Image (tube, rainbow, N blue to C red; front, top):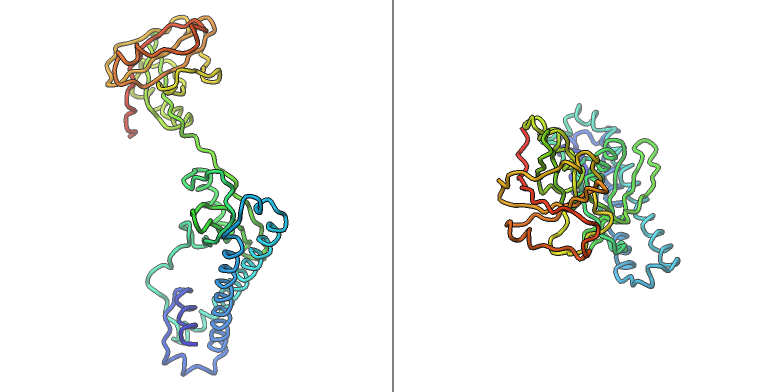
Length: 329
């Protein structure tokens, strides 16, 4: 019993004065604290026990079994049971919080000086459960900016339970629990997509001289660099983010061409190669489009690169400097 009360009050951010607790055993708040401590110890042990059962059920899931509706039903039932125990556990914690005020007044509890530690994803209402949930086979990057923003927003309004694959650590499901009603629903995390393809910001001056600034991971990030560049270079008249084609791949896909205004396509020219790296711009002036290959470590390497397109579409080959983006102020 002592361990249960200590564990509960520590979880709530308090220290127990056992002398005063024994002195006030006849007080309703003390009786309630002991009852809740017993309940939370039981629900926590049962929750951990059933999480181990879920792990045993799903730990050896084969590809064939993963698509079997019976296996899915078993996994869903087991996970629902764990969530029910989780809900019961936190309901008991809510009941304990109701009596902390009277217990502090009696001197039985003293608040910790330190703030309670946060949960699995850095938010007080976010918790992580590592069990053998089936892996979808698709990659999921937890650094995904949309995913991180979702966790932040959800954690401000819900209690969040994350379900991770026990073997790989990959998030597979998130359960959102309404704090007031304890209603809950779950979201499956099938995959993630990130805008990390190398890009550069193509800049054109008032005299139609072109230059590149990069590499920058992602089209959006490259576009975001445009205001910074324009503020520090008054000669820049226009910019656009462009993907960087890998020099090791001779084939340029149809979707790798970037449209440019016809007047810029007609007048565009190279500039002084004053950077450590260069890129090769294939400029189709007739169709007002271009693609960028690189960066290359030298002018000779850029000039030697050849496409497998046999000269179609007809293009001008322009070498441009690739400037490293300047750190923003």
